[in-house]
Each structure stands twice: as C-alpha cells, then as structure tokens.
Length: 179
Length: 246
Image 1 (cartoon, rainbow over the protein chains, first blue to last red):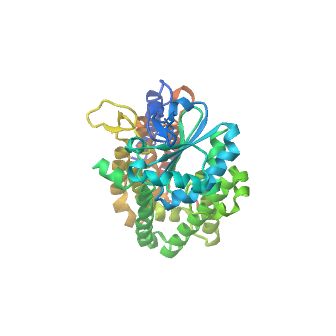
Image 2 (image 1 turned 90 degrees about the vertical axis):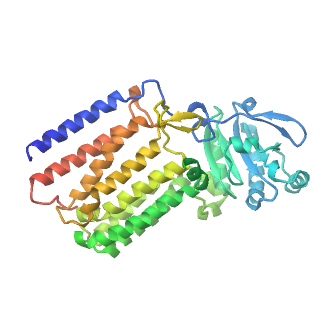
C-alpha cells in the first residue's frame, strides 16, 4: 500500500492536469459579458422610462457614459439620507461623464410627493418614474435604496443594496466607473 | 425551492449562512480540539483574533485603494457598510493575525490546523449555501436535464454541486474529527478533498477567471494545493514522525 500510494497520487495529479486542459474554455470568457442580467459582470438590462418632466430616457442611449442608477422612494428614510451625497457626486463628476438616474418606485410611492421632495433636496439629476414597477422587477430590486453602478461599456460593476451609502463608498465606486 | 431560497435570502441576507457556519463550525472544533492537544478556548481566541484582524485589514485595504474618498469623508472609516471592504487585504491581515497568535500562545501548527478542520468544513457548507441564495458562483450554460435557469440562461447548478460536495466532504471526514492520528493528516485530507473536487467542478462554472488559452486560474491553484496536500499525506504515511511544527 505504501508503494502504491505515491503511484496513485501521481496518477491523480496527471489526471488533474489533463482535466484542466480538457475543460479549458477556448471560446473565450465564460463570464456574463454580453449577456443581459441584473448582476455584476453582466450587461445592464435596457429600459426606457419617463422623467417627471415627461422626457423619455433609454439606458442604452447613455452607453459610453458612467451611470449610477439609484432606486428610491419618498417614504424611504435611507433613500432620503443619501440623496445629498448623490447630488454632491453629480455636481463633482458631471463634467467627467457621470450620469445619475434616480428611479422612483412610483408603483409603491405617492406621485404627488415626488416634486416637493425634489425641490426640498435640490436634486438636479433626472428623476425617472417606474410607474408599474417593471424596471424594479427587471433589476430584481427587493429593498430600497438599491444602487447600481454601470461602466461606460454598459457592464454592471457593482450593486449596493440598502443604505444610506457612506459618502466614501459612493465616491470610490464612481471613481472606479470613471477610470 | 430555489426561488424561495433566493427571494428570502437575497443579498445581503445570504451572509447569514457563513455567519451561522462559523459559529457552528467553531463550536464543533472546540469540542474536538482537546483530542488534538489544543485547548478549545485558545482555538476560539485564534478565530476571534483572525476575524478582527481581517475586518481591520479589509477596511484599511479599501481605504488604501481610494484615499481621496476617505479624505473627503473621514467618518466613512467607521462605517458599518460591508461594501467598504477589500477581501484580499482582509485575508492577508487575518492570516498575519493568526500567525502572530499561534506563535505567541505556542500553539503547535499542525495540531491547530487539524483542530480547525471541522470549522473549515462547516464553513465550506455555509459558503455554498450563500452562493445558492445569492446566485453568485453561477454555472456555465448547459442543456443537461438538471439545469437551472439563472441570469436568463439554462446553466449547470454549480452552487448545488458545491453544496453537495461540501456536505460529502464533511460526512467523509466526520468520524475522523474525534480520532487521534498524526498531526496534520486530517487537515491535509480535507485540503486534498476540497482542492480535488474544486479542480473538477470549476469546469462547470460560468464565472471562472481565465488565463492563456482559456485555462481557469482556480483550477491551477486547486491543482497546486492538491499536489501539496497529497505530498504531505504521502510523507506522513511513510514516516511515523509528525510533520515538523512551525
């Protein structure tokens, strides 16, 4: 048995090496890449929503820019707490190609409360209305706030669930998007 | 059932599985540690110090990567947000903390690694469940009858494979937790089983990091760990002497 053990172990290691080469992914990256999914490493699912002003914004139309999508509602205290920092980031990084889209979960919010909220917080980035909750479902948003960081290539770099996000987290993720 | 699991334990709630696994695993390890000549409370101290060092290191590593962000918001240093964390720094600091404690309390290395093996085995199960709940570590596209639909494509249920193999390893080694044998043997067996199965199952993952010619990095690392552990087992089997303690 003592003599057989090294032989068996050697065979195992040789088989292991063979398996590595046999199972190699020759077609290229096995990661998400061009596949659409609300998951880090995948292409951000496309959507079109209307803003509070009635303008239509399509996500794919913003390809080439760094995008932060923040799902929020007026009744959500952490959402409110992080809005000043988000506005600060918009002001600081707008010139570098940062776009912030605040998607309001209108299907579970009061429409009439949105405009006063925007005015109170002095928000200047687009407020998109997810009136029937479709985009929230598309991105599998299960809690508010949820923030999605999308690179210039359209790939989701980071999903942050919950809040309020520390300012340093927001800034560091945006810096990563703009690299 | 998978949908229920993923809905109820979607991130960040999926972290409950490794947390419970650490608690259960450490309890198990502490129970069997005296048979390895290691005091149960010292094992718990080792785990606590590694954890604290890891948490500190993870935060410091993230700060080092993005200093400007923290200069603008120093209070963020103390944030409880788990995203302000660098995993590799956490691992390095945790390891350093563990080594320092091992040397200061004169815990014999191989005896300690054997004593920690039950905890590592349970933690592997906890991590597998977390992957199942979060959808991480997803499988490669497949047309086999037992595929699961994930991220818009039918895929190998790699998280299920991972869970089953972690459970299998635990069951295989369970009886050896309470047995006394050459120091290092139990840990090396765990390492060999884990790395060997990882080497095999990585081929069915859809999120592998690749190097030249489509070779999966995780398989290369698993092969190296497997080689090291088999060599160790071979040496221990041949010699009645134990591996020299660090």
